[in-house]
Image 1 (cartoon, one colour):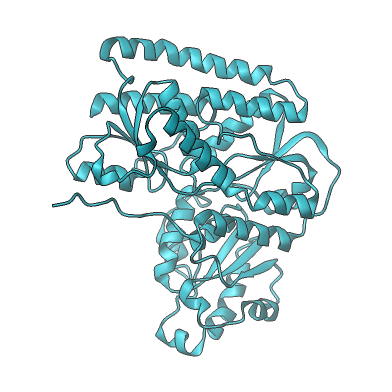
Image 2 (cartoon, one colour):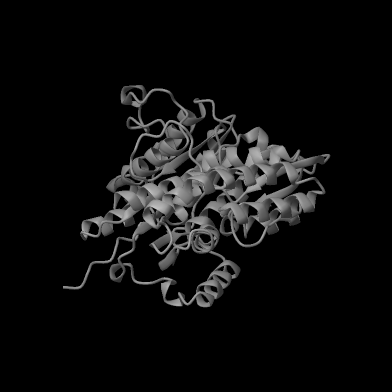
Length: 430
């Protein structure tokens, strides 16, 4: 019997659009759709960016919320699909607006998009004192990053930020979403490293920002790309509408010591500031790692020679594959690209070819038996269900479900130490 392939859990543009708006702290998605489309997105947005201290479902038992604080829905049923959702839309808009949000996005589910309700008309007729926008077709067949970026563009068009006096040494971070596994810790780490060089972060587009921050986006000196597959559509928009330059350091996100140094150096060079303080912090983290890894290697011979499978977006897969191979001597047996840009995929392909591991690119996961698996818990669990004792490091959603109180991160110097800790323990536990 042939081994079964792992399930494809890649989200689509519909989820990307919802998570973009839900990534704004004082904005809300109003979902025009059935409860089946509501519960997943409501749970995911609340889990990735909590706003309420209580999880008592009785506090959110009112109509449209169904025990969840996020993503209220019109709960479409058979009759609505035949006659339209006019009555529910007329009731839900004022109810959501009364919650004190600064922005509301009315988003059609795939099924609701077929009904033909004029969302813009309902928004105008409701006359609520809150800026609203309609996403009638939220990229149902697009990739997550495309739906995310299209929603961000629509948000910025609705808020209509204008060019402001530029604050030297201030940047916006773009290409991050609350759907990234450890987004909050990554933002904190990058903000820290940039701050060491005198660079401040104005806002992070639709990843923990506020409406006020989005309205002042043009005050920053430049937009700094973190994950390029989440920014390739945003960069041209920001250049053409706000005349803002975008800095896109090559070779992927700042993951691993070497790539983090490269990322910081490129940013500081472009902004004409001294990178020395951040580079010193990265070197201190690397020295700390060496003291531990040298002992670990002396006792076990690891991690050199261990094999790994990696399932990630290109901006993560490229720097992580290079770092695991160059820094730790680990060997890729499968590198599966999800979201990526052509340039990133081309560089990764050349690298794998140069190290005689070209077959690893998009390899069949059902035919490999790695020592470590980097990816979502769905993929890690697939290997273990087959009886393969892999060490698993969940760098993507869905996560392991473990309670995490302290923010983790994968990027920057601290992220490198976190990954090394889990790599070492993962190899010991398998």
